Length: 250
Image (cartoon, helix red, strand yellow):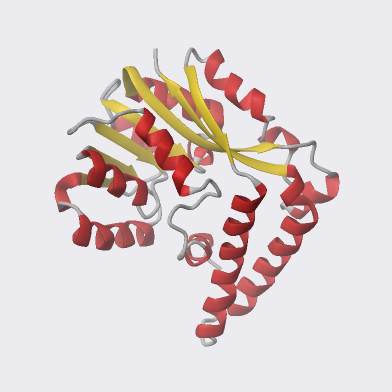
């Protein structure tokens, strides 16, 4: 079963593929006060909903880095009915390779929400965005953090994850500070937002499998989502957090 296919189906009804509410996200975007023709890069852009909204509201110029072709195809379908087609440039490639071809200090605003793994983790992602974003520009990342130390059972249920893969909320903010960034704001997902995200994620797979019994991946998808749902309810809801972190570059 293709991981990208599973994720695309699970997120098909989400506006954004993370548990932070839209009002919080768009408020943080507003804090950066984008100007027309500002250059914005989104690493792991998915269906490009955030870039589309930035173009709609602020007339920016977007660059989307996204490895999954299916997500880019969906993004182009959305763009065609909402904004000028030349408003977003698409780079369908591995993020680590793609950023090497971009100019230092060539963007006003850098975004990576829920995709820091694409660049090797939070610290490397912030370092990369610091290099890509001009002085006094903005950086917005979305990252998981531990609300409490994870149990060994939870880490095992996550496929043998390691506690070092996430930090506390305070330490996540501090990573940016240690790189010379100025923390400006942060929001974290509350329990209701997490439940909205996780139940929509889960029900999207359940409903797809009911609607497409001929799909050869149905059995594997159902096994995976039902295991994930039990894991979230037993451990994840109380242990794993998700935050948005806004910094100014220096």
